[in-house]
Structures are given as C-alpha cells and as structure tokens.
Amino acid sequence: MNKIIVANWKMNPQSKKEAEVLFNSISKGIKNIKNSQIIICPPFPFLSVFGNNKSKKIFLGAQNVSIENEGSHTGEVSASMIFSMKGKYAIVGHSECRSSGETNKTVNTKILNLIRNKISPIVCVGEKDRDHDGNYLSFIEDQIRECLNGVSKTQIKNLIIAYEPVWAIGKNATREATKEEFIEMKIFIKKVISDLYDSKIAHSIPILYGGSVNSLNAKSFAIEGGADGLLVGRDSLNPKKFEAILNALK
Image 1 (cartoon, rainbow, N blue to C red):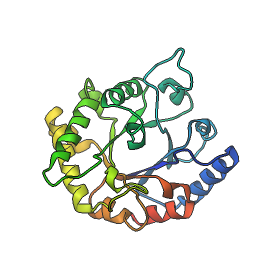
Image 2: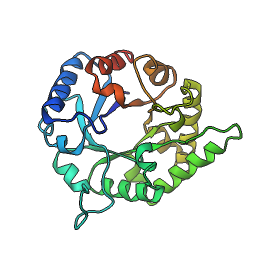
Image 3: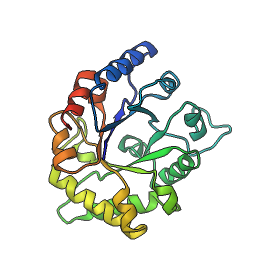
C-alpha cells in the first residue's frame, strides 16, 4: 500500500512565482520516489495555478472549506470551487482551525459538503494534552463520532484521518510524540471506526501521523509505527527536506 504524504503549505509562500518554483522543485525531486501518493495543499489562490499539472504522483488538496455551498459568505471557498480547480482532497479540523473556534459539528458539515462534491476529506483529530488517566482517548472518540455523524458506510470509504497531537506540534510543543503513542492511537481510532461501522471499513481507512514531521522521525512513524502516511507542515516548504522525508520511507 502506498504511503499518503500530505504537504500542508499553510499561508506560504507569499507569491505566485515562489509557489510555482516550490511546486516544480518538489515535482522534480520526487521523480524517482515510489510507493508514495503525494497530496499538496497550497493556499487557495494557488490551487488554480497547479490545476493542470501533469504529474501522476501529485494530487491537489485544499487546506479548508466553507460549511456553505454558495451565497453571500464573504471570503469563503466552497467545495464545488475546490472541485472546479481540480482539487481532489481537503483538510478539515486542523488544530490551527480548531483553536480559532472550529467545532466538531462544523467539521462534520464540511465533511458532508466535501463528500457530496466528490472531494476526499482529510480529517484531523488530536488532543491538546495527554493525561495519565487516559481521558484523551474519550476526547478523540468524541471528535471522531461527532465529526462522522451522518457519514454513511459508502461515503466514509474516501475519507482519511490524520492524528495530530497538539502537544507535540510547533513552538509550544511540550515534547515529541513517540511511535508507540501513535501505534496506540491508530489502534484506538480503528476501534472507534469499527464500532461505528465495521472492522472491514476500519481496516481500510488510512490513518496518518501529523506532528512536526521531519526526515528524522518520518521512518519511525510511517514504517516502524505503521502510519499509513504523514501530514507534513513546515518541512513541506523545503524541497530538499521534503524529498528527504520521502526517501526515509523507502
């Protein structure tokens, strides 16, 4: 099974020209990469720039989507707009969006909108703190159950889940996550999905790891830890570092 590598560029780079240079550099660097499916999620204005890329290894995704389908919603981008720009995927429920007030109910609406528009949701889940009593497991279960409310067995087959422990991300990270912690969480997430649907569906849903991913820990999570792929932030903006991550998965 190919590893799914999602490059989340966030609000970078700052110009169309820089974005094109970055995209082309990544395209060249992955020519000899096998067994990986790469999804690049640039800022919205750049989606249309890469819509006609001819790479068979790179797919396009959006970093978010509106809960609305159309209408008077200033600054919003609909699922149908993403689809028209050849976006195949969209990230929802990212920790940065959740910290700005996005709820599980909001994420659920976005998931349903994406599925209706033939776009595969990349659903982020993750706890802010990992307590010794295991309460974080209930927190993750609630996220999954509420985010997948109303999603049918047929619809969930195109969904990807990315586990991102908030406490292990960015400047405010308290420590790095371990592959053992991811293994535990992957098993738990699949159990929750199995309870909601069935074991066959649970086995088929890809579970990615996303938490300050770099070339030094990529192998630990994706190979030794059994992650079905990685959600890469900062290092996806550096072609050499991104290529190093992919090479670590050979």
